[in-house]
Amino acid sequence: QVQLVESGGGLGQPGGSLRLSCAASGRIFRNDKMGWYRQAPGKEREMVATITSDDSTDYADSVKGRFTISRDSARNTVYLQMDNLKPEDTAVYYCNADLLSWGPSDEPTAGRYWGQGTQVTVSS
Image 1 (cartoon, rainbow, N blue to C red):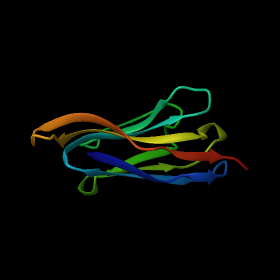
Image 2: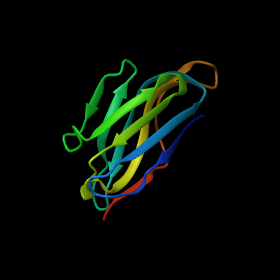
Image 3: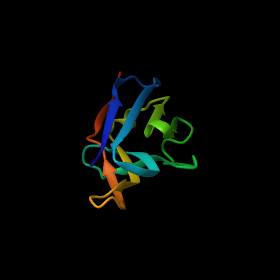
Image 4: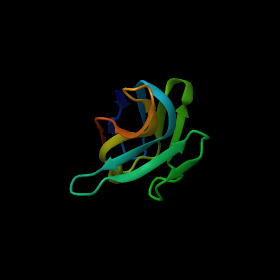
């Protein structure tokens, strides 16, 4: 079993900053890619930022220059530093991981995992 546990989020002011963290735990063989997605009310879930095991990053155009994704591979943890927040950043943010875990027969098994989501609200 693999679990993703998120922390951070909450209420931020326009122009302010928030930081999200997500730790993956369980029988992880290899963690290939982690990222953050978000879903605003009435909208589809969208990619915010991703980071691979070799630290290659990708960002949505709407957050480039404002958000920074990073990871601590030793702790299977990913961070999202959100600066210069805008009201349109308001959404539930979900952590995501594409990784190999040890299966029931001790064979590496690929899977995509999601956190429970954390609310980010940007308002004055």
